[in-house]
Amino acid sequence: MAVVTGGGRGIGAAVCRRLAEEGAAVAVLDLDPEPAAQVARTLPGAGAYAADAGDRAEVEDVVRRVLARHGRIDVLVPCAGVMRGAPVTEMTDQNWTEVLTSHLTGAFTAVRAVTPAMTAQGYGRIVLISSIAARGIAGHVNYGTAKAGIAGMARSLALELGPHGVTVNAVAPGFIATRMTREGAERRGRTWEEHAAQAAAGIALRRIGTPEDVAAVVAFLAGADAGYVTGQVIHVSGDP
Image 1 (cartoon, rainbow, N blue to C red):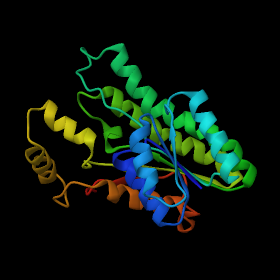
Image 2 (cartoon, helix red, strand yellow; image 1 turned 90 degrees about the vertical axis):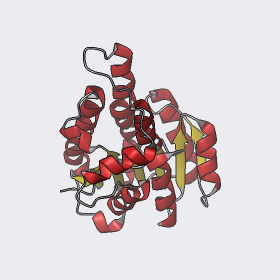
Image 3 (spheres, rainbow, N blue to C red; image 1 turned 60 degrees about the horizontal axis):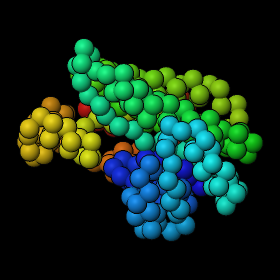
């Protein structure tokens, strides 16, 4: 049984589909119920749940409902998050808080909610979503900070939860074709094709990534073959 937050679109939706292909029943969580329902309808045994990933009460309620229906949670992948870019001198408190809450607090909230079930059953796979932006990204100090925090969260939780049979890793995507990156093109006044081509030119593999590229690595870390891998941050960026 897998729980995926931000599962209605982009990387989250691709993760839901890939985990379902691997045989998991998937709880698709999203702030917007309609995309979550659309994804869930295409996957056998999946369920859609409307929840704000940064709201403790809402997330814990969904976890209770999933446990009541399925009896266990084996995999957690928190994918929810937003971007609110601005130079540091122009970044508002709201810009800062929204990004930190959606990415960093959202991941923490989901982990805290599922940990009792995972430790009680002596098994769990937690795969967090960091980013190559954790290395630094101009104009998005809130996003870079949140993603660096997620990398630290993975390492800290790996040490804490390892004795209970729970692995914790993170995937750090590079430039991925999602709604978020398409919105970035619009903000810069570029076509998507121009924006993607410019990004690809600076990547060793000379192409941008897809949500499915990320989902494949998430599925590996969520599976039996990664049972001796924990506390790692794996870049999925087409670059060294």
